[in-house]
Image (cartoon, rainbow, N blue to C red):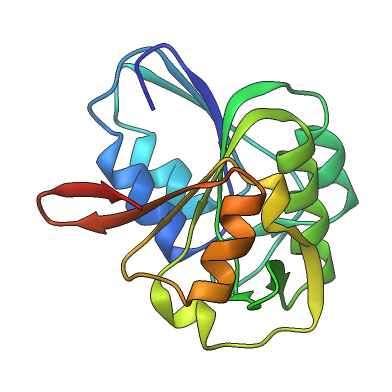
Length: 172
């Protein structure tokens, strides 16, 4: 994500880690429903932050609900940085909270490029609510190589898969 970009950042510890890596950027507009992301960026002079209104979840500082989804739908940004709770081998993106899912879907629909950030544990988990499919994603950044079936779905959908390492990203 380069300087002078606009982006959505949704709820999750992985998306929060991405936010911490972007604090030295200039000219960013960050639209988020994550209070932790707001706090990460609020002292960064080169970054403007806009936050959605809605119900604040006590457990994680996520803002959810219909007013949140409506706020997100007002924008068209360069990137959406999305986290999920689980990834199925068939390429399905999943979460637990239907309100959070609607916000993530609005972010995906209103961005030019979608970056899915998911640690390898997400491939082992299950969740009941469908966000969408890997075909809606442009980039997947994870910490370990996914199973071949999932990688096949990524290749078929032209998703660029990157493995985050301490020295940088390795593209598969």
